[in-house]
Image 1 (cartoon, rainbow, N blue to C red):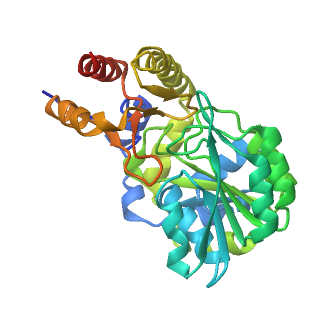
Image 2 (image 1 turned 45 degrees about the vertical axis):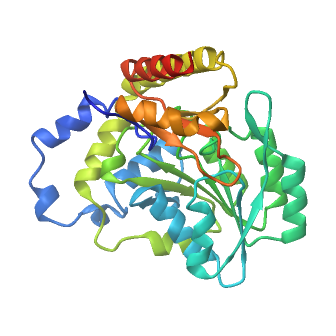
Length: 340
């Protein structure tokens, strides 16, 4: 029996076939020589491609070893000892640890639980901003592990209040090819950095490529992030192959969205279960706390691995990555078998 791994939010469909084609007959120069992109006055072929896609100057595109790398550089660049970093209350655990790396202070702002989804409480966020006066703010949309996004209107309200503050909008879990809002936002808010990854949507977590589009005031970050000898040329070619395969990824998103509906409908009908609406490639499921351990044991015996949350507040919750349609059916059926 093959283990079904749905606990780390990887894209189990895998990348577009064109990505594998790059590996079949790679140009030997990708291995032998440093990048020659500087001769064209650019950082790399990937940063140039992204600049074209986002209709923005190439020097406002940052590449990194995954989105995590860019986030770390951002915090180390703009946060110092005793300065405040604001992060969502329910979020990726690393958000709550990264301030420690520079002796900063961690301040949390609330996400609230609605009937069928979590949401950002904008009024409370604005109150905390005025009270705490943070040096740096992290906003995750969609957020991990709750799956909720921040609306354009609410985001504009928050960014307007933070116009003089460095803000990172983490869009690692975005799932569409609409780039217009990114360009519009960074042009309107010069202290904003929007971070994305090739890990989730493009199913390229293993090659570790992240990027950011930055506002005009963040030239210090751009200087730190730039690499004199260039970037991983093979990874860049694979990433560009992914960018050139929009139909493949649009099909995957359609399948994942259909399966999320199955999770909402079928697991949501089980006694004591709440499946929260998600804009990401996972769903968060609240279950009766007393079944957490027996359910984990039941699924483990069937070689189904999902995330059993064990945080201060989210401690009776499952986070289930949306896998392939076959995998999702097995997970839903197994949980229903356990519940009945």
